[in-house]
Image (tube, rainbow, N blue to C red):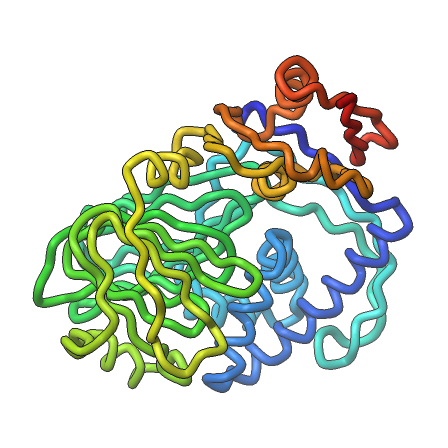
Amino acid sequence: MNNVHPIHLLSKRHQAETDEQRLEQACDWISRIDRGLEPEEHQALQQWLAEHPQHQDVLFEVAKLWDKMDALSRLSDLFPATEKAKSTTSGKHWAIAASVSALCLLGALFYRVQLLPQQELVQQTAATSLHATYQTKVGENNTIELPDRSKLVLNTNSFVTVRYSEKSRIIELLRGEINIDVAHDTARPLSVIAGGKVIQAVGTAFNVDIHKDYVELIVTDGKVLVGAQPKAMDDAAELLLAKPLPVSSLAISKGERVDLDPKAKTTTAQVKKIDQGDIAASLSWRSGNLIFRGETLQEALAEISRYTDIEFELGDDETMKQLPVAGMFKTGDVDGLLEVFKNNFNVSHERLSPDRIRLKYAG
């Protein structure tokens, strides 16, 4: 989004250490890919890629430095084709003296790595076939039209893998939030995997948001079923997910919300009715807005913080934390937000640093 203020939180020294760690981890993954990944390693690789947007970039850069170049061909098998994402962010240089293990490169190499813009890993071999990885950075969102005309929207700081075949449609949400409008296909149900649960539909619309302790599911059209995720995402699991979930599965219908517990072995949960106003507020991020309808200031700031790297400090003022907030805000527009707080809620601010703001309540 154009109104996002990117802030770099790490010092140069800390950043260099982090960059070197990413390089070492990428080298380790390249060595594993070169000798062949086990099924559990393939899943672990997807999770590592989901941890940070730059992991994907570093993995491909290290692969290019691989002596035999075999890793690039193996990466092509895992992620069949690459396209540069629609990003205007220029690549930044990493000046790193990295000691790379013998598993990755023979001897120690000292080099400068030029990071590419964020990449999307996409292959479309047929109208119904796709294997892709998509991600967004803090403050970004992205809309993808899938081969079956389903529309997938990623919210800020999200990561998904998409696997379409002639028999199955599978989307795995590893981080963040998605909204999907599912194209109707009774012969090929669409399954979203998130927080150890499978959310399945044949033609509907719903929203999935991964929180720290739960997964929020809101259905805006039709009906979905919820079941348990297969233990490992291998070929057998894909065949299993190609079949409809049992009719006895937890059912969520239009205008309903449920919070799913990732730790629970069963899919029993309390289903709640929500009105159209709450649904509109929950999904306002799709148009670059955040709508609050009486949430406390503390709750509102927790949501606002998802769209910027700036950290807000509330201190121990419980009165200020419990202030009810109502209104619409542009995601990432920190200056506009502070102005509204000052004029409408009598909350002033003090900038402690470029990436930290303390709020004060005048009473």
